[in-house]
Length: 294
Ligand SMILES: [Fe+2]
Image 1 (cartoon, helix red, strand yellow):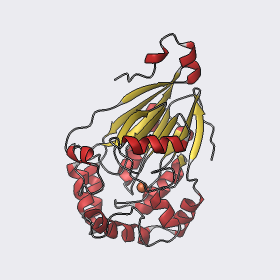
Image 2: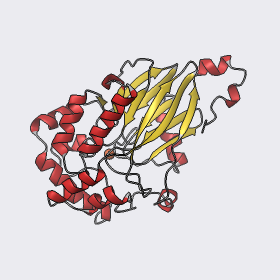
Image 3: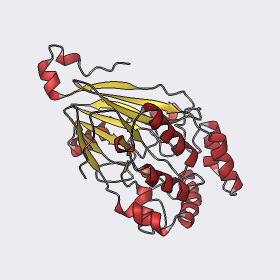
């Protein structure tokens, strides 16, 4: 689905994951930044690990931002039996998913399932002379894990996307990386911390200027103790409740070796300037216009 955006900052939020407090914190942050819902894009997985699936879905609907389907929306809309994350049978992630998915599925209303079923699987838009495609996981597979260290995979996925910049979600870790002439931008997620030992969650910004855009990742502090307590109150204090207060994932099963080795290491914010082709042609410093600014 193609959307029109104003030439103004765009906020990107990944996986709210039934974390109502983190989602509300992101809405407050958008207000603080003066970003209206029409300039906010959610990359899917509104409902997953945390305690308030129905409440979080309703808050996102009320927010009125753009949302694409993640694997969780697709599975819940279809009334499926699991989250389709393709965790290995019996792995820690598989066992954890067998806890949260039925919990969420029991609590989500028919109205919210129907809303999930109406969401697009991808969005495209143009900003400052650059073409964007928004996806959840991978181009062909909604629950494909794509991490920063997987250069060949990112190159292939970016080629399939056919845009200057791919905005993706699903994997849970924020990163921005260039592959050939393209750029891959994962904003991280709202619903879980990024396995860096901090309880903060993450969002992204796309900030247009005269020659292109600046992509950036940002920390967001929120009431993580309240989110964990809410899980405990419901008798739902699984590994993900601990993650909310430790900032460490309950399992590293899905992580490539590089990302697994960075467990507990505080992530830095990232920022990257991407210039449009026309700006590069005009600029005498075209070769350096793609360089990271921090
Ligand atoms: Fe996902």
